[in-house]
Image (cartoon, rainbow, N blue to C red):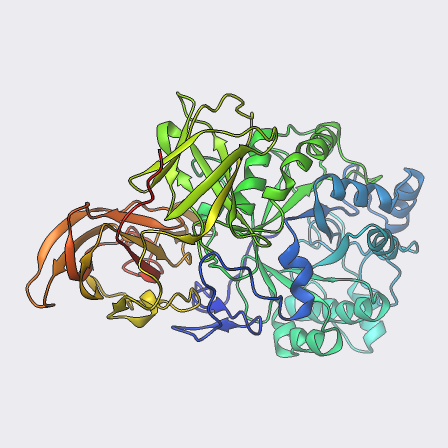
Length: 600
């Protein structure tokens, strides 16, 4: 990976991907409604199907400067071949991780800009053996797609004390002087490589692009890719660009719990989103000659956390010169080969619960427990509760049920039924004896209707997007606080709680990345008032809403009867030091509850 260079006002992700065209909607767009708990609409455009269906991918940084470093392209190619490199090894390792695609990062600014494929374009290392073609063919045979990494950046051209960019050869090829060590020249060189690769590899599934180059933008590279190869996906690192199929978030660290990478992600659903992270705990993105340690719990937690928030896990393993992984990374892939199958139904073909697809509330639960909820797309009445951090004491898990009446709960691994109870808006799973070291998974079967929540269309709001049941529309306070939102129940009715889905366009983990501070643009201090006539108001609740992803609840008690409710937001969590998030507030939906499921 290379440092990010962002262009223009930041953040660019304030728009949300339209379900109809793969493009972004601004403001309160009019994309197709996705009712909570409903199956995901068909993939559109078709090229996105593989990414939408994927749970994970395998990221491989591998090139001339993979340890031991080679400074001659032919010598590196010979070492790779003599070492016994085979594409089937990578494909088989990807399948152990249940990865649907491999991103091959060889044309990398700090790995010698190596092209492990024959090329008629001089300028950087290009091999005689077609490693890329062999990988594509091997992957196709086993159902694993290949995506090629492309960089925009020439600045590391002499990092190792040798020049890796041959400007003279490329200039002779083009018939004019071009300096590959400068951005315009390198942009033209890499631009040419995009087209050569597209022409030569009809089964290549896409490009994974590390930022942008001005030359590409000026010459409409992405638009031409769309025209020439509409089957190819485009993914961009750390920058949400409308023409891209997917935005990838580079490794996030420092959050609590440490595996909860989604807490530092700023891309809202339904945008196709990926989290790329290193499997070894230390070291570079590529093999540096050491057998680096692997924290199994951290990596399993990331895998589950990403699935539980509708994010793809792009796991980076450090292939050695012969393509094989160091022993500790090999041990991890072998572990995952056996670990994932018993719980695979809870991680694949699912959506993150507690967000736009409905589901119970993820996050912090009882007694220090933490976890995620996934919902089956094929059968939305099946949810999976993933306990990634078990309670510090006791044999039960308690979480908000969000109005879902539970019929049956089983331990997914053993199939053993578990007793449970529901009251006061919470589901309690009892008598848990077999806690898994990394992820205890409960299969929760529910009825097909939610209870205790006024249906979509029955509650009107001062901002219509708040209660339209469409998570592709949202309200925006335009940076003005306090903000006030009024809900009209139509007549005097019981109101027990509010369920609030704020837009997931900002992180909840306060951090600074590449010199730009990030913070949570979510409700902090609030008050709720009630009125029978919309004129005379009485305060019924005030407090602080936690800064967390997913649905948040404000309980109003069991005795409130009113026609109007008003939510006043006085402060949000983002500090002035994060100006792109300070005072900003976007809310997708507010549901009004009138009761809770009860079962003992």
